Length: 238
Length: 238
Image (cartoon, rainbow over the protein chains, first blue to last red):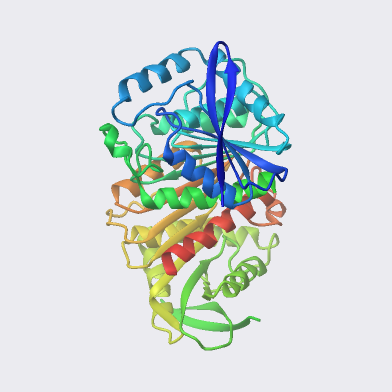
């Protein structure tokens, strides 16, 4: 059984409305921060969180926007909000690290065993947490954006995994090579898994509703990347 | 418990001396063909075979050379023998497909559930089996050579997984991108897992004895790639 409740965090005049997903026992547990896609907190990420709780983790699904979006209907404002955050990667980093700190100080969180995973834009955010050089155990990006943050490079302490669709129209092969080289230069323990014939958004069964070419669910890639994540988190947080 | 025995195969005037590794029950099982590194059949591949038998597979460790080599001591003749095979990829394909057929007709082999995995040069051979378009369920390459075979492209039926060290001096990033594009063009269901700070030969604890820069064991990459292989074979042969 899992329980959910809201965790509100004030940040720069905004109220971020995160969702804690937990097993209800009050045990101190290793913790996974889940950063959603451009559409913000949705049932998709809450389902991932429930699967993580079943694996023995405490989970926070992060609200980066300070608001909720309705899928498809709110596509434009959601992309605009993402664009604003992506336009200032230093400010975005501050926001992300504030969330990590908020999580780390919670009583049911084992602060030495925190991972950050993210989807699409949230995948970029997860990578940005690693790039900040902070002391989190692991970072995983699912169909994340790979463009570098443009900030001074830091040694990366987190183990990094990136699950990538080779046909992702937003992340061409050159960007995969560039990420490999960037993570190598930063000294990260990293792995990138590329999947053939797979586009952007492959973990999301309703991704096609966005109506963007190359953005679609892929059952095999979803299953394979999740299976790898389970091993990856066990290795990093176990 | 596992049992081993020799299986001799006549091929073009040579006697290939394969090793069958099996559980001794005589059950018909899904089967994995293991193609060794440039050094031919060694205790390393026999250990991998034992682990595969423990997972419920029938295994054949293939002898491509028709002879055994002593590690390190026989480095020169082994590399020469590999060079001969790699110089004629059409002839190498014939040899590989003859081995697949030899395996498929055996009474304890479920001919519809055959996978081919290989290491280093054997990884290239495994990919060449996929490239031949033959009807095997899965092909996996560990630190395989990625150079294309130069033969007319065939639609690839096997699921393909390639486990790759990003710092492999024999397989630069351009070759990774080229393999992704080649497998995509051939319609393969493929995945490539790249590992940072990892060189060639990462599954082999004695790889450094070859004395080649960038060729070394890596415990994490070995463990991660094996964990993925277990899932991959279960998916393809299960």
